[in-house]
Length: 205
Image (cartoon, rainbow, N blue to C red; front, side, top):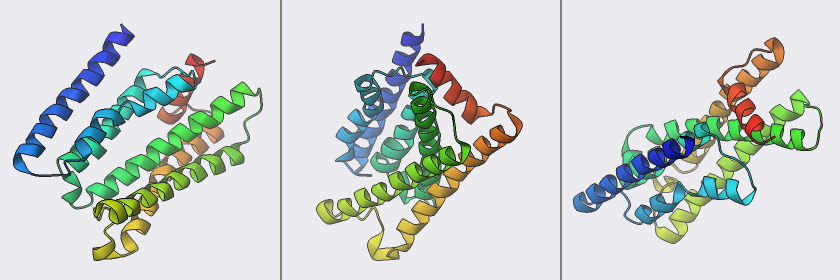
C-alpha cells in the first residue's frame, strides 16, 4: 500500500511537471533549460537515501516533491520567481526543511554510535548545516550568473542585498525548527519536528 501511494505521489508530480513544461515552452515563459533539471531533481533525494541504505518515510517523499514543485516547476519553469517575495518564501521554507533534515541526521548519527544527545551541540549542528547549505546555494546562483548569464542572484539590480536577504530568511526558517526543538527539550512534548524525526529513526533503527 505504501509503495502504491509513493508511486501515486511521483505520478502526480510528473503530471504537473509535464503540463507546466509544455505550457512554459508554448508561451515562452520561465527558463527552458530547467525542464530537464525538473525531470531528475525529484529523484536526487531518493537516490541518496538508496546509496546510504536508508529508508525514506512517506513524509520525506512528500516534502521532497513539494519543494521541487515549488522551486523548480513553479519557480523556474513557470517563472514564479518573478513574483514579489516568492524567492524569499522559498528560502524560508528551505531553512525549515534543511534544519529539520539536519536534526534527523544528527539523531541518526547519535543512534548509530549509541551516544547521548547533547542539546547545545545539536542546535549548533543543525543551524550550521542550514547556513552552510544557504551559502552554497548562493554560490550556485552566482555560478548561474557567470556561466549561464542568468542573474538569479539579482547582482545587477540589488548587488549583495539579495544574497544577504536570502540567507537571513533561511536562517529565520531554521530558527522556527530550532525553537520547536528547544520547546521539546524543555517540556518533553513532541511537536511536528520531533515526530517526523522520531518516525524516521524508528524506520531506520
